[in-house]
Length: 180
Image (cartoon, rainbow, N blue to C red; front, side):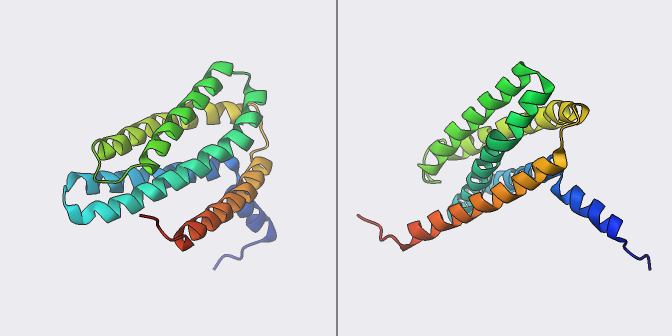
């Protein structure tokens, strides 16, 4: 059995905290959620309504946190380093489109017209955005020698804060009696 050295552990820790790896992991998680939703949407069973609502809630929660992390921490660092205003502006607009659809979905019930279509369009838009980030922005960030480890540590800390805030919001909502 191979002994794990202190240096190996440091490298593993750095890989875990690399901003590009963290963002890619988020991308993969949300792509999987959209794929699961697509399967649920195919079956028009009313028994799937609650499952769809829960899945869309999770998609919206993850995307909201992810976009906030990118806008607060990752994008400003990348924008300054890569000097490609157009691609960063496009990413900002794609975030705006996603946020608009998220807001619409959060205000809807799964049984309403266009609910499934909006989730599918959100998924397609996000897939396009992910491809551009991973194929264009991430390589430019790497080439610009951005300190992705330091950014990753910032992203990790801020994500924990946002998750705690969301959890607090959700527990507050759950405690409030519904008015009729």
